[in-house]
Image (cartoon, rainbow over all chains, first blue to last red; front, side):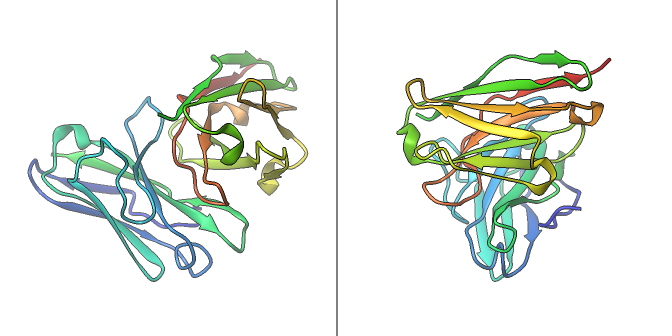
Length: 110
Length: 119
């Protein structure tokens, strides 16, 4: 059981916009910034979004993040076939004194 | 750019220990925390522990307390994770991941090291 709650799956067709939610609590998302990672099967997680809504260099602006209170969201616009991957959210938890992860969302491009 | 290069895959017998290395480059090694996270086959990400390379102090998930050690070598910008008393449930890919200058979730990740525990 993950501390952060994500939907196990999401899907969309090429060109579509999809969003993935990440729900937490006051001690984690409510108090700290959120990172998002993309993990293509068989490879390491890749930082996609940091500090709620910042993109590392090289990440397309089709990917965007937002945070409100104790929830965060990742939006992917102009969906492409190579966006098919697992997506994880993460943040620090002040009560547990450790980072916490969502359980991951498997994105399928139909 | 930040680069984390981990040691190669390992196969161990139950009860043995494994030591995985993570060599960092492209940034000031002592400034940023380093996390260790593992991922069992088909599962999500599980945080194991964190080390402050500058001071060497560590913090671990309760699940791994007493079974894992994190150390660092400032001269080679390398962090080591040792896991003892291995069991089959420890079969997983182990990642090092650079954190922030304070307690934050991980940012950049190493390529991962597969540890297989099998008799």
